[in-house]
Every structure is written in C-alpha cells, then in structure tokens.
Image 1 (tube, rainbow, N blue to C red):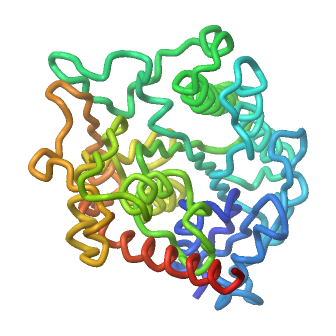
Image 2: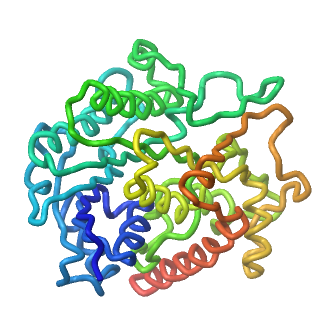
Length: 361
C-alpha cells in the first residue's frame, strides 16, 4: 500500500539519488523523479521498471536548475507534494575564480526554495544534499594536536571574498557548498517558505552503484568511484605501484547516505538539523586491502602498499556524528562491506567495456 507522502526528488539519475529513489519506492512512497533531460531519465525507466505505470512513480525534466522558475512545472502535482529532496547540483562547476563558480551553486539552491514557496505551498519538508566540504577547513592544516574532530556544528571558515578571489578548487568547491547551504538556512530563517529544512552532509561517499547495467565503461562512473578504479584497479597498475594518497579520510556507504536522506525527509525529529553522515575512517590503503581480499583475480593489478598501515598520520582530522544513530536510528555499514560490495561491480563493468571495445574493433 502506498504511503501518504508525495515526494519530489531532484537529480534522480545521480549516484546517491538512485539509491534514495529505490528506498522511497520500496517503502511505498509516491515520487516524481527529476533529471536534466529525457536521455538521463531513460535509464531510470529500465532500472525502476516495476513501478512504471503506477501512481508511485513519474518523471520530470528541469534542464537548468539555476534559472528563475526552473522547477515551476515539475512542482505542480495532484496530489500535491509535501516533501522535496534536492540532490541536484549545477551541471558544471569548474574551478574558476569568481561568481561563475559560486553563483550556479547558490542559485540552484535558493531557486528551488523560491519556486517551492511560490508554486507548492503544500511542501512541509525540504531536504538538501550538502557536503562535508561545507563543514571542514580544507585550506587549513589537516594535522593538529589534539586532532580536530569535525561535527555537524562546524562550518568551513572560508569567506566569500576569499572564494571569489581564487581559482584553487580546494577553496572554490567547498565555498560553493558552504554558501549554497548557508543560503538555504537563511531562506528558512527569514521566513520565506512555509517548510522545514534539513541538510545531509556526507564526506567521501563510496559503495555499489544501484544498477551497474547503466554503466557502459569505468569512466562513466561517479567521480569518487572513478578515483578508486583509476588508483587501485585500472589495467596497467602493478602490485608494486604506490597506493594513492588519502586526503578525505572520512566515508559513508552510499546506501546509508541515501537512508539518511529518507529519514531526514520523513522523521519529525529530523527537521531543522544538519545530518553529518560520517561512518568513520577509510583510507585508500584500507580500500586496497579489501579489494585484494574480494578480488583475487585482480591481485596482479591492485597495489599492495603497506597493508598494516591503514590509518592516517597522528593528529589528522576526524569526524563524529553519534546523532545519526541516536536520533535517526541509522547504523552505518562497515567500510569492508562498502568496498567489497563495490569491487565485483567494477570488475564486471571493466569486462563489459573491454568486450564492447573488442566487438567494435
């Protein structure tokens, strides 16, 4: 039986969002899945085929989320929406200096909130996918004594002036996340919308893609997964090669990140909060160890590194988010499960890509 919530999900073809969509549909919610084009929706029709033609699933297209009124059409629904989960981000965020970088991120967030307030007053809860980048200071030293422990109460200290004056991606990307999220909280605090807000702030998001058949070749994977493949599994690597360095040592399984979005959208006690989905520490060395265990056929490729040393240097920053389990009731998967569930998918995608290339040679 369908549950009562009617939910708009933006960026529905994304890595995290497809897991969100699956969980919502499995639980009986009615969802309009929004993407930037019909070509991006087409794979969703196959993956979520069992819900096609039912009141639980329909689709919408918003080509450019940063233009005024972009969501007006898709926000109109009968029955009306009462929840919006906004995972979409601007299509292209190049590491450019100035407002060319920041404006799309901020407008893509405030724009949908304005559209909701104007077109869909029935909406009572909005959940926005933010980032650990809005929490952490990526320009400061990563090591301190004692080690910095980030929580959901922290904000990246970068100023708007500093972000506008640089093309350093370690400044501009986090700034885009910080100021987009800040703009959303300000929108609500100023009483511009009749809805509650919650944000989900994940660190490194890893784990299996929902439907590997959508991925024709490894380069088509989401960025965090491409980095794993390129650094640890790509043909041409050798066991004697170095394991890639880890900078963002905190992780969350994509399935748990998706679950946090669902809970943030549907639990009364989740409103008005940032949800920092930090499951713990995971380094590339740890990933290499897990992949070597899970994929014996790739042991002549996966770098060995220093298997006994899976931690970061003493004093490296950490994260803490006990409220995820205490309030949301979400228990995180261990890193081993996250990586071992991903590994076979990467091997399969690689094999299919090689076979397709051979067939057309």
